[in-house]
Image (cartoon, rainbow, N blue to C red; front, side, top):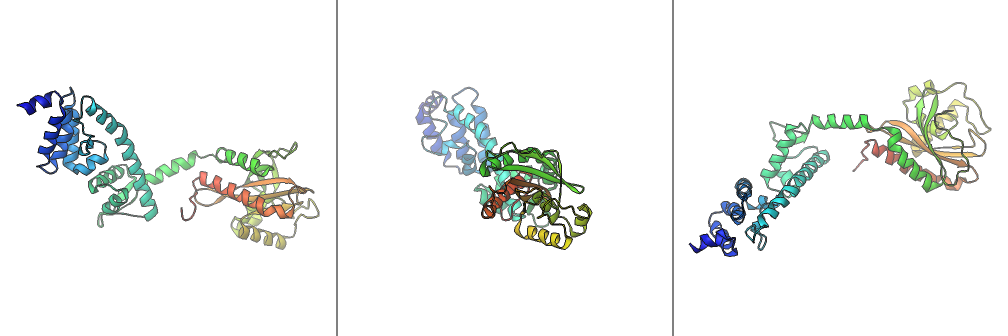
Length: 347
């Protein structure tokens, strides 16, 4: 009788006896520990029922992972005084869904990295019970985010991922994604930064950001420039299929300065060097005293869709500065490509 009275008043001795009694029956003990401590509080039976179900399916370890099995740790049980059960339920309701989402995303990352995996491998990498991994995979399978090989029982990414990726790709705007990168590059190098795309036989500038060293720069945004005499144009041409390059050139090539390359064989060699180096330069080729360095911007499929360049007076960009400027511009191009969905090799 004393034990019953103690339990009704929420005394710690009752929780202790319930915990000890439950230990005699493996598996069920955890559920009783979770439910019994809260039984003295109105409405606490629900938590006990939830805890019992979880423990019955997964055992004490899984209940502990979900935040509901705190009674298995000394001093943390829901039987420790009034209000403890409610706090446990609040913690479980807050942490449980977030933790499940995090684990589900981790599964997608595992499959993206490894190509496929079984339930045991997923459970081991997540550090959870196999039943937990199985339920998460089943939920992802229902949404077609993963697919299971019926014969082998292993999982891979599903068609739902392609639908999501396609929707995300359609929502990515080149100018929007590149704007903060262009600003950062202009601040870093101090020069004017331009973003250009291929448009027929010209390069079309979409955006321009003036660096702190630029003094009243000419605004090229919205203007077209010749492909063969600019760093942006060379980048946009160099990564096109060889059969298409001539289609984008306005022949015969126009000479703008003494340094403009107008001979097709020589220009072909220039494009080959661009592909080899990963960037293009134009020194006094469009205007005397103007130097520019450009690098390719790629979409999620790896296709070059734009170029980003930094340009300034030739006296501020001497030959010895070009490698460092090219490195900064190439890094910016890679960052825009990443924002557009390109996955770097080995990542």
